[in-house]
Amino acid sequence: MRTWAVLIFSISISLFAHAETPKEAPVPAFTLKEKLKTLTSQSRHVQSDNLIFDLPVTYNKKVSKWIAYFQGSRSNKWFREWLQRSYKYMPFIQTELKRAGLPMDLAYMVMIESGFAPNAISHASAVGPWQFIEATGTRYGLNKTWWLDERRDLKKSTLAAIRYLKDLHAEFGSWYLVAASYNMGENGLRRQIKKYGTKDYWSLIKLDALPAETQEYVPKILAAMLIAKAPNLYGFRDLEKMDPLDYDIVLVPGGTDLSPLADHLGVTRKSLKDLNAELYLGYIPRQVDKHFIRVPKGAGQIVSSFIHQQNRKVALE
Image (cartoon, rainbow, N blue to C red):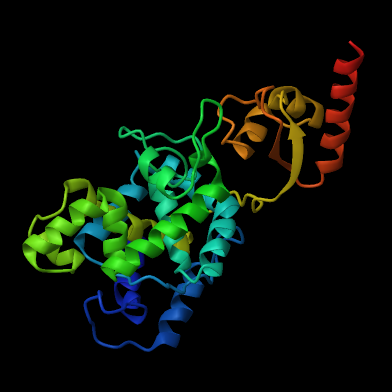
């Protein structure tokens, strides 16, 4: 199956490729689409018709290597978890990207950056789903205090990432270079482009002009994107389809602790804390007047009543 999947996609990506993609002989689109739909229709839990790409797609040895790696026995389990989480988080991220006029497939950067984990922290102290370092996060409006880190908030970090990606594309003009600069920093990429006189990502790789991690970054994104578009094709069958992220927003006073609130709502403490990942201590300090929190969809009124009762109890004491 893996060989057949690679063969089909190695042919079909030429249909979606842009200027950055090597040209291949034209193949009738309807034939390929029918084959892909047939191969991906074996499980009702798998995306089977999301075969449109709005990023340029290149298929080469590096991309093939990462597809094989994600399929491998050592990686299959956690990559499967990433795919399952994508059902929850991708719709939100892609909606924001579309609203901003950016390619929706840029959302696969989040899969590679953090696997959609709100509390992910890299060896370079980058934090959150989009893995912002503190300086870049601050530059794009993400606040960090002793109790709050907005880099961990999916919505706030996604909106900040959109502004950042727009700025990078305005300068570099290529989505591959946008991803490269996001990974290695725009200053370093500027120097290498000036030094080697090219703005072609694959040429810079051939020249060994980019850090090793950056040379693998775009291939990782492309591999994840190809698998996620048709997971059944690559052996990821019977995925657990998580419900898309949805929530109510409630304004609560300082002193609100997420743990007893989760207990009252009958949800796990981890799930409520993940929903409010920016509150990385798990509570709002008493010296803060008010703050918005997210709660499970439909629970807004229950939370407001609970907070009112808690405040009344404190006042009586």
